[in-house]
Amino acid sequence: EAEVAQSPRYKITEKSQAVAFWCDPISGHATLYWYRQILGQGPELLVQFQDESVVDDSQLPKDRFSAERLKGVDSTLKIQPAELGDSAMYLCASSLENTEAFFGQGTRLTVV
Amino acid sequence: SQQGEEDPQALSIQEGENATMNCSYKTSINNLQWYRQNSGRGLVHLILIRSNEREKHSGRLRVTLDTSKKSSSLLITASRAADTASYFCATDATGGFKTIFGAGTRLFVKA
Image (cartoon, rainbow over all chains, first blue to last red; front, side, top):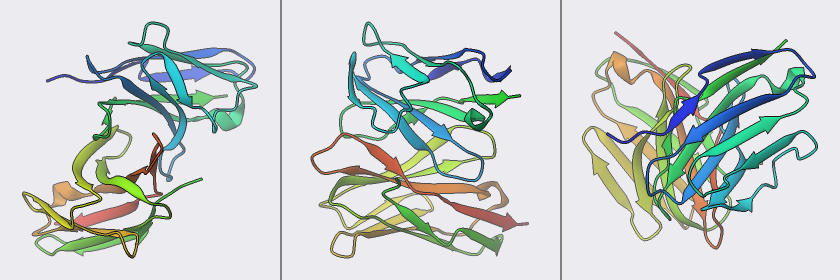
């Protein structure tokens, strides 16, 4: 069964360091999402791609976060420099247009 | 900002009972989705209901949608301990591309 792959599963980093997360969506899914989920809250959309284009990044803190999906397939989310408040679960999801999203297992980031 | 708001925030029931969770949203939508999340894991899609549908069933799940009230409900019948999880609604707004989630309902089913 096709899955959204994310790596790493867990990441511990010191504040002010750079950190990167990788996501490989389900083959053929043009839409890719990055969400941040703080413990006890719902996922917050950070950025949404349609193929290689960003269609929404209004909630992405662009002074420190960046995301790319160069060939319209896999994607990377980067944080530089990391801050203590960035500790959260980072979830990647993909979908066909106007259908349900399929989620990866997420990357749990701890900034110390 | 969050489009959907789930109610209640937390729910504790006995195994075998039914669980009902509600979701309210703010703008017109193309569809509404319900997801389940076990602790520390990714979200699993349960059911999608389109704006022109009023009710949908999948196994022990029943979802209703009232677009005039901008609300939806998820009913889990004959609950099991394995249903213990957080449940989220998410909406795809009309004219937009975003899938926006609410804060979730935490369901605890006691064996």
